[in-house]
Image (cartoon, rainbow, N blue to C red):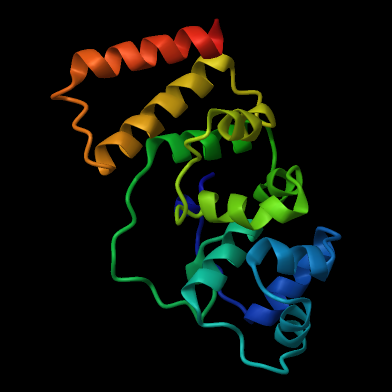
Length: 188
């Protein structure tokens, strides 16, 4: 079930986070690193020494790691800007579920220094990598075959080229040659 279809379960935010950490045997230090805050911040949130965060970025990161909607935190204020649907990101998220992984399990597969970046990709605030090797590494954990990895990369590169001012429709023949060469090189 995607997080978009889950019912919203409200509860005390600090208790919800503490229960999640305990249930998943996740050290506060690892959790802090995954969401981009300090260890003392996590201790203070759980101990209620400081008010629970109202920063949407922090709450969204916590929600991604916990596989819940950010709206489950009473402190979360829904952003006014609409989120863009990203077919490749949704495909990757579906593969996480297909492999019977929680988001936490998936994030833990990466080196500690890369976990925050992975969380931000999964919440849609950072783009899928344009580096084929980085994308391939991300997909390897999910048993995504070479052809599907290439399709995701090609789609991402088309986005990247168009956002940089290269009109792929007006340069359709050149674009086809570029991706045919890349396919031969990468999938050989």
